[in-house]
Image (cartoon, rainbow, N blue to C red):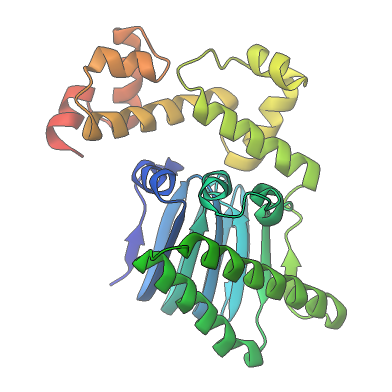
Length: 298
């Protein structure tokens, strides 16, 4: 039977995972599946995936790429993504939220982790030579052990292990570029545009209760309204208004199931203060009323 992860929305914000990554800025998973589909989702942080076996495709934004073991993927998790694999699929996932991790490191002189781990192309795929397989498996296992056990200074140990992982991916990228192997830092968008899109999505996420009209965003980021329309659609497949509406309803779902806030209070918190408008929008996207959603914890 095929395994599915994620939710049924066309591009769902992973609310539960974001709560976890804000509380603990490091997360990992090692799984083996027979058939696998992760429905399109996005969340805070930067992610590394080490694919040990399996083949299929990896969706990122509005693009789809071939995905075949052994391979490492490094990407901005704020951009909607999904995996579709056939046969046996073994993978390690590591996700970190650089800003939160920075606060937990004992060495305050460390450079910005956003600069260190930011994937400026949006996503990079690195085919892994056979001689690196055991080394990478050990490295991912070591990182997972530290995250699971959380002993004193574990954040610092994981930070240095992640730097080693990043250095290996850079080496393999250089080797692959020289010998025409399957290494492709994706040309989804330019470094400048990817940074701009991630900043925009991060701002939207942090300010869902505020005015997020194209005019307001254009004034804040000093770009034209049309620029934002194009940028959001390019990376999410949705218009600016559709994306913000979906994000507000996804945030409302999380609040409905994880807090005792009144529905009116939740509506105000997610930037839809008119209760009637909130209910209509919620029903159109969730297929039920907010009260029904909370009652059934859908």
